[in-house]
Length: 226
Figure 1: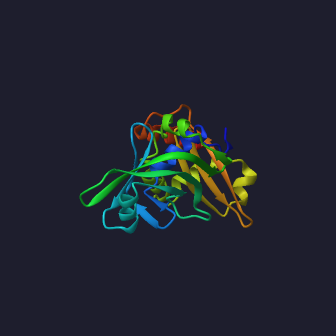
Figure 2 (figure 1 turned 180 degrees about the horizontal axis):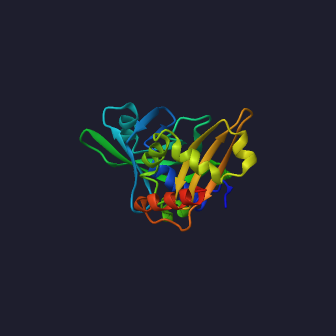
Figure 3 (figure 1 turned 90 degrees about the vertical axis):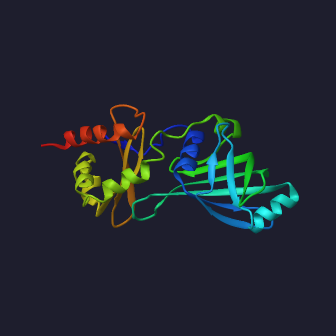
């Protein structure tokens, strides 16, 4: 059985998953903008922390001011090349405070006031307390590598899995890509001449970690056998 694309978890959980699985983000303050790669984490209390180069303008301004209004923008892209790679966007706004000045970097904490997520489910506000309490999908950190592996095997696995997609959708598709992988299943992107459709192939269980993915993919492939 296949189903329409649904996201695993609440909007808060999906935002935490986006933060866990995305390397880069954009930081905006009233006077500066910075593109940061590999410089954010979410601490055990669910707060977003940024590591700013101490010699950057935004870090110097933050140290001088103590705290500044800030907005963080995060875009989730499909790791496999395809049409319309943007899967989700998040905007987090609040107050940025220098938490650990000194050294080559400045550690800063975003005290969140508002957050918003835009994905296939639409536009959803996320309560800061809900975001702090949420946990990312257990496959988030490994998802990109797993999807690239599916896309790099000559598409044979993806073409086989596409047999589980309803016939009319499959026949219209010119290209099929692995779009998303989470604890609930694999989502395929079917590109046609006029647009695209995303179809979820659900797993038989909710996965606890990446090590369980091969067995679930094998179960899906077994259903494709003649």
